Length: 562
Ligand code: NAI
View 1 (tube, rainbow, N blue to C red):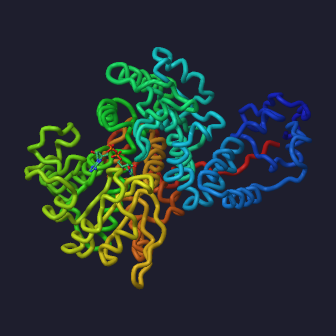
View 2 (view 1 turned 120 degrees about the vertical axis):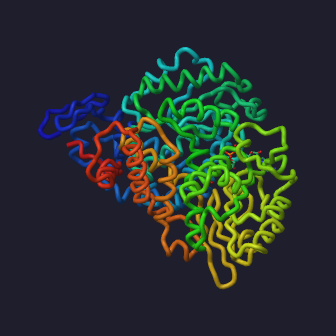
View 3 (view 1 turned 60 degrees about the vertical axis):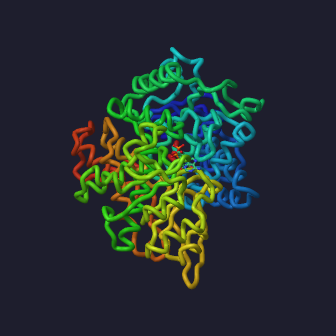
């Protein structure tokens, strides 16, 4: 260690390093610390100095060789769930190697660490759980949340992704087994936007579950009682929000997969008070708007000329509508006229003014129209040019719906966003087959290439991972104190502008996911600029936003400890 005398052979001894200001454990403690472990890549000298001799197989490997072994091993697994388990195991052992592999194979591995495989992992969480990651706060912790957050060993946490597990993807209430989602999302923050792993904290708030199967399952990891609601629930969330601000000043809190009754309320309650956003509402909106902007460029059309039907009237659909309205207003439309272009359909049919059962988030889109019972009748009556599915209803975009749209619209824009794949409103193949290959299609979960006639389409995935990591990085880089709709609008515009003619040629309205880091840096730049323009930034303004942001991004490389 730079000539410092170190008792190399003594495991568990803490070593103060001269060239770094942190304490490095030695021996087995070092091998068991995923943030510091390099596995077989510890050099001979490091092995001597850090008490690792004899604790590792003798042959020293490089990070590149390790990464190659890992991807070969992951690919050899019999199922996606096995691949997920193998990657999570690696994350628990060696973070640098995990991110190296993930970043090198982003397009291939994102569907494993995130949707759709993470959905399966959450459904099997009680069976595959091996080691705790992140934090759990339960209703029994009321009054002690700040103290509990004090148990987290890192002070400089910048992003918390928090869920209460009530609406996990399109799979419903999975209680604390939804923890796979915050963990996966934060891995994406690091992989796609270079937010340092140590700055990320996944949290699940256990307020019970109403999932009967889980309540009766001895392997369920949460408290086995029904969900707490009302004042008791609100008080726990409130305590958590302010305890988190106190423990980690300026932390960005991302709400994730809350049931919609709470999601809208919580966002409304906190968005002007703390640095918080809801990815299901706002992140989804930005990525969908980006896809729509690209699709309209592809067919040379204007957003304010479109009629949009959103099948589903929950978090995703309402968030998308709100951002579309903002985008139409930027094209010069009045707000009321813009809202009139967006129609929602929920489980009771078209959302119209005469309905008396509408909760508040739907009311802004309740227009004057006769009630219509289903999607097909709405498509026939309203003749949408854009159809977006965010309902969790498998196969809701029937052949009749899709071919009706293609009867009056040369290039219907059809986004089937529901996740995971099993819940998608239609498949890519169905979209192309029912529209003579004229649909501009995107989906929430990935579909493979589809050949129609002499064309092969590789449709894009409307994946929030295009947006939230860059938004988070922009917030961190600027020290923004709030997250605004303008930031999501600029993120959408930036993402769309990154979509090229080559993407269009294969029917893709998003850039290749392999460019995610480059795209996230540009989104972060756009978001940071909004923060400075709006007076929300607390950091010093850089002279060159993009290069300053790129310089902050985490790279998975091993540090030398000698
Ligand atoms: P949510 O629970 O807030 O909303 C679901 C909506 O679907 C509700 O308005 C409900 O009334 C409606 N619905 C249910 N059954 C219906 C039926 N038979 N006919 C018409 N509408 C029906 O859920 P959220 O957050 O809006 O998510 C919905 C889906 O969108 C999920 O599958 C989720 O995974 C997916 N999603 C996809 C994203 C993406 O691709 N980027 C991002 C966020 C969500």
